Image (tube, rainbow, N blue to C red; front, side, top):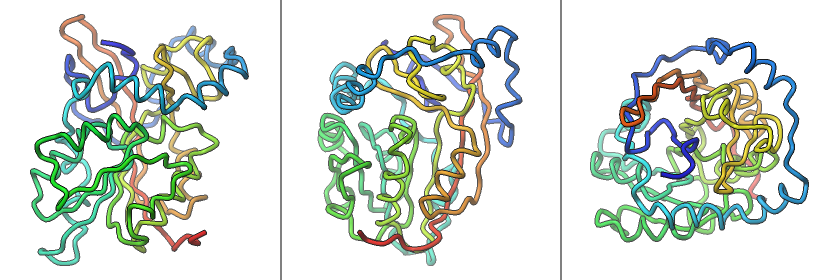
Length: 292
């Protein structure tokens, strides 16, 4: 297994997760004096040249990740309907066909459990990695009548080329925004907003500030404030709920819920139990973005 710090809430296949403890703050994580000192004094050591190279090669690095791991890295996300009741409850009438956009679908660990569980749903699924999209299309559960998968860079490719403007009820953004350069995150959210219906909702889950994966990084991996690069060249940002709320509000959303979730990752094979911090949030589109 590569890049163990990429072990997200959904879990790598060697791991189990404790139940969520919602409503906590990242300050609930007790850091050692050494960790506090290191985080406060740490300065990015990655050169400007390498930072530019990582940004330029971001798609290649994610494509290589899926080449190495194919569909075997993450567990299927059967927890999404439990954590996000909007996937069931946001219909205006029972027979309404729900239209969902999975922004950053990977190899389909979220969309295929949803398609199996809800026969009255249509899913648009996009990913930065062309290889990941091909894995989605090759899945036996993939059906063009119920799912449309396509490659997309959320920061520059207009989603409206594949998704009708203002047509989507729900967007899932799960462990995706953290992989985007912080300076481009707002562009991705504005892009998503254009295909959402008025009052449509974004369901968000990602790495929270002081997550164990963040604390494992050394200064030589730091690209910027709360932003790090893994050994395989993929990157990860760790969100505070204040920064996340500000980001969404600037892109035309209002918060419905925005809380830290504390869990523990248990790796029985290696005898490890480590604290995890995630941010789980819901944001409504407040007004239509200009279609420029």
